[in-house]
Image (tube, rainbow over all chains, first blue to last red; front, side, top):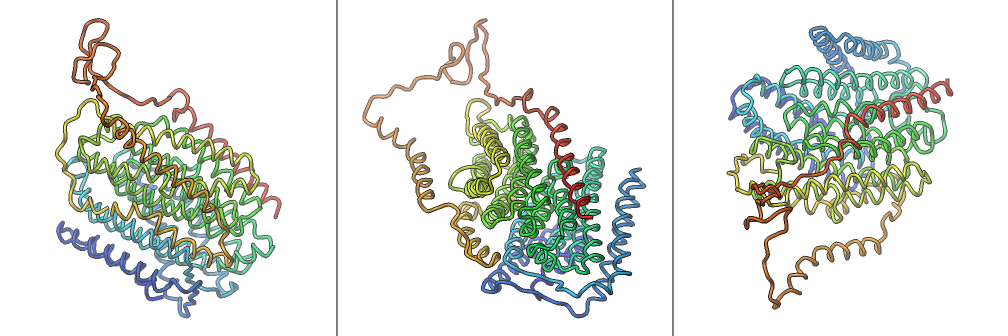
Length: 499
Length: 131
């Protein structure tokens, strides 16, 4: 319990300090030390809880915590409303006000009728997720120190708002820890909203016209998901009288009809994990500095969506909600893999491949059998690691050569051998045999076949073929040596090498 | 850290399976059988060995190093060639992106529409059916 509280609160308090500190050197030391601490604590937590299967925590006195959450939620709403009026996008304000008022209304009028449930729940899935968030997320933060220094050297036109940037990164991590460990739906919703807000602010970091436009795309799509989440909470509280996610899922597996909250929750998860009708926001997120995109794509944000789907997966087995999730996920996997073929911007390719892999994870979670969930969890892990590696190396290459077009990466193995090697490891991790992705895809294919869904198998087979094609293209570009074969001086910072 | 990334599959294999066993409360079915894994490893090593093996096969035989073929006369450095008009051309390789088949502006909108309708239809059936 203490560990969980530490993970959440420590990240948040570091964020507050980072927000105030203006000194460059102090900030970099603080980021490094706290990242190491977070990683260490999460590993210790994993080892200590390895033996226990399930842990529930009921917090007796949560009045104060609930009050703080309520106030923060209202503050978030005010901030979103203010920004949306300032940039003349009223629909965002309406979405935000609608869901926050729904939750506040529940908090005041239905709180008494709701059965008391556990607040914190920590199982193996939460531990795996916390390890991913801690290790991958913190390494991205360390990488960001050097990257952002270079970034502002290259882009003098943007205002240097690094204190806010780093503060947001840590708030993001804290919110993710909160999200994965909470069992009470209201608490989960609270952290869900924080991640939405953080991603919105991070995408709009440069404050250019495009960045602002894309950040608003991100926020309206995610708020739509948030609205569905709030709707699910309202349904659970009023009709079922429960806000305990585990209890609700147990009802789902034992045959009670809980289709509506489950389908609303999975809708929210689909928006957050950028599935097909909503994938535009993740592509738009590419305007942000590379650490942001790496964080959004690998360890946080999109993983929050698939985490919720994996949690829900026992209740998704063999009903309409499951069909929706699998169909949308499989379809997204196929289409985005095909589109990725036609892209030459490295970050765009990575974005499409992220969406494709998330689609695959969604499809696996939607089937809801043991082996498909096995595949889904493995995909989450491998995807987080190799995707963050890819993003960071593309960012480093961009800072060194000034371009992130794949065509310009021709013969990178000669020009920047070390970076190219890292990139090759990343690409290989995405699709080659001895690495994890292929094994998880194999497992996914097997579970799809066992579920007798021919359409889904077609999605997976053709999608995987396209995946193979675009990764091999990129790989070939890296190792082919014909022209421009002079070695460049490597300007990558030491701390960017941590990965 | 690169080492971690390389060994990651092995580590997670030992970590995830017991995790899952606890999560679902039963034993995890064997998803990829040992035989298949062995075949995969065999194929992998074959692929890795082959390039080196070819070098060994060529050992001892007299090999001629020739300049690579291009669409014109090679200028000798494998980077430039003389084209059919008699001028120098720099050799350039590029990928094939198939914009006209898989372009973003061709595929993105229809697929968004299809996915959106799927979600709308299923959600309305579900919510309408239960209420």
